[in-house]
Image (cartoon, rainbow, N blue to C red; front, side, top):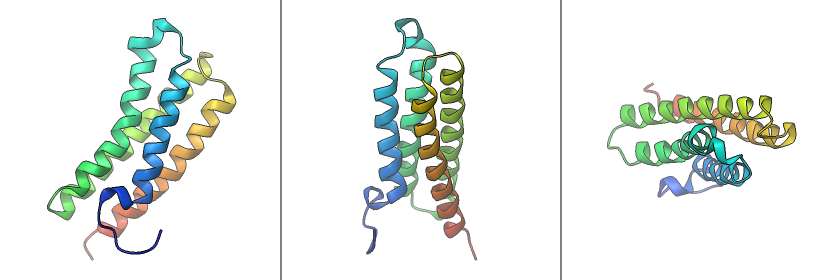
Length: 122
């Protein structure tokens, strides 16, 4: 994407984090019912936290606050990666399903790191 950023919605990292969250909902629809209040809810919560924190940080009035929310998004992303690996290990997600989401998470993590560095004071 080129041009001026007018909203957090213009950020590619936010767009891809939204796609990842939607994909995790698709994955968790097939989870066993006994996991509804366990792994399923944790996967969904951590996945939705990533774009939500990117958006919330963007709405803050200062750079330091924005960076902090981006770091929180990074933490949620690592939490999601861990839950996905657990889901794979216990057979709730196939290797292919988990790997697809883990690769997307890795790409988002790299973008978050770049954005945090770009916002750092010079």
